[in-house]
Image 1 (cartoon, rainbow over the protein chains, first blue to last red):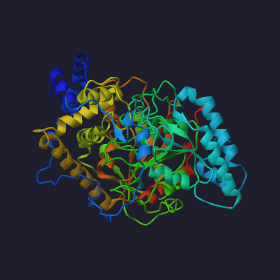
Image 2: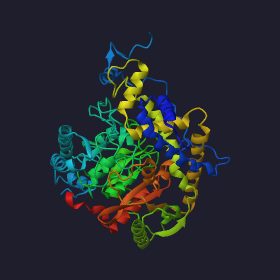
Image 3: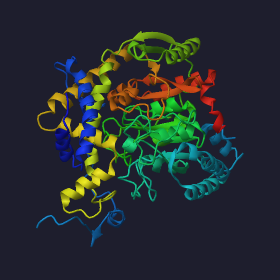
Image 4: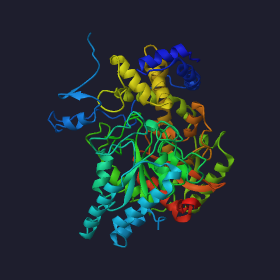
Length: 95
Length: 483
């Protein structure tokens, strides 16, 4: 499978990655090679095989619905790029 | 002195032959002297290390005996360390000073280890050569024009050059074993779920597993004793009673059934590497092991299956880096979309972007069945191959890598780089424990032997490796420039 630069731009947008047209052309070759490489899976003997999501087929563990974590808000916000009054700041969302 | 192993230092510290402070100084001086050639550390924490060492000395004076009391170690920069930058080798996390410790760090601290610093790595652990780090490539101590392997390349190079007696690594597709092989050290990827992933920055959550890297199997066992154990904060942590991973070290090999998967000895394997592995098999035979040929018929599908599953999980995990709560944020975003796309576009390097895009594509509407679901089915048949093989044998053996450490810049196209992990990835897909240990040298470069065990059989793997290390001295060799 061959990926065009325009398709790279579409995927980059879905993945929220800013990308110049030049960079998209550069990525197109490598991505085409990877998709061609994974086409080897097409001939695999997997008829009737259950997909495997997890090595140990574990079940989700549950815990009592109790507060276990202390309030670390100040520590967590100290490493944020922009905060004010306990809130995270982002550019205006609603015009 | 720097040739002493981690377990040797534990004994000497307990015997009060050396203080933790002296030992910490010794290794900090080695880092200062040698690391400019290797670039194996991103951050050196000299001050806090000396404080930890003094605390350890006080505990040693009180007769305390926690497993790693006073021993210097390094943490791969993927493990969160409270108050210390945790970059994951990425510009995205260059400004990130973690507000908490990973469980592995917490446990090693409690065991008395002294952290010398954080080691370099491929960005977000995505790479097999340590060339994708934002902080520049790591050099192989055996030949600084060659790569140390990746993604735990900083840990491997630092241990290989004896800048630290032991370091942590993580292994999603071979990231402990391949660099261990390339740098002439011993490294173990435990069974999935053994070591907590809490505070270990996620790449592919169903594959990621932390583990020890050190000179010997005994060292790895001691480190794993401190690292492993049930953690309620990791939803996939395995609930099992604590185990002593050094318990099998002195088990002899009489009657041990070792399987050689024929697929690991086929086309693409360097003939000289094959020769080294054949010689190692003879050593184990000489100690009473029985050798059988086995087959893992679907193992050739492991790399393509991995390059669907790992990128899919990575694209999901790395969605959290949005420039809002922590990490890199672009200047003057004009709107929210611009904030996301430019922060991520600037913060991630090319290999990480490539994998995020592959993952985004295979999970996108209309392609899920053709790629992701198919890869998960292939994952099952690969795991089933191992299940059948372990009906007949106790341990599997083969090369860790198909070739010797390659030159920096030698693998420019992504697929050829991905194929460096051709023998290691299957164990991650199945979730099995696997290790690499030094088994020879070709043209002055180390060669790694891989052992793969059944689920939760780490103690046996370490035992086989230890028995091999009783009869060989490859694990004691240090590159001349760093002796």
